[in-house]
Image 1 (cartoon, helix red, strand yellow):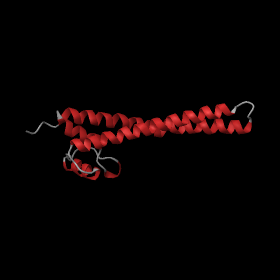
Image 2: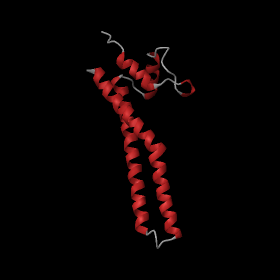
Image 3: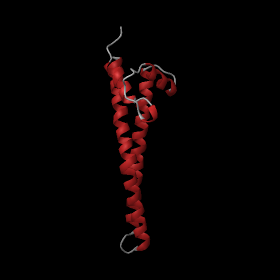
Image 4: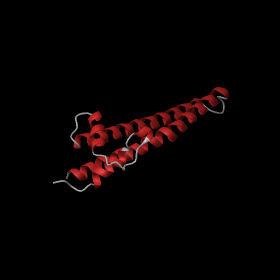
Length: 130
């Protein structure tokens, strides 16, 4: 069923969009601060903070970056799946195709852009056309 596959793809998109946003705004900056702090403390007092502590902080940062990139990749894969299900050839066409189906009362995003989750929600909840 097309509607259920579109709902599943949109769910993956929204989940990964949230994860990417959280990682970008909170987790990545905190991990960078932790690594930099550990490195600076090692430079200032190597007897208290050993080189292995710096390596562990670096590995933790790399794990966070890897998780972020995996979430970003999954978000784009879901977006491409949505484009495929809506049978558009490019992501620009998806944007145009979504705009053509927008009702005038749907919320606008920043700078007047359409809110993609609201548009997809409208498509998913619209009565089936036969």
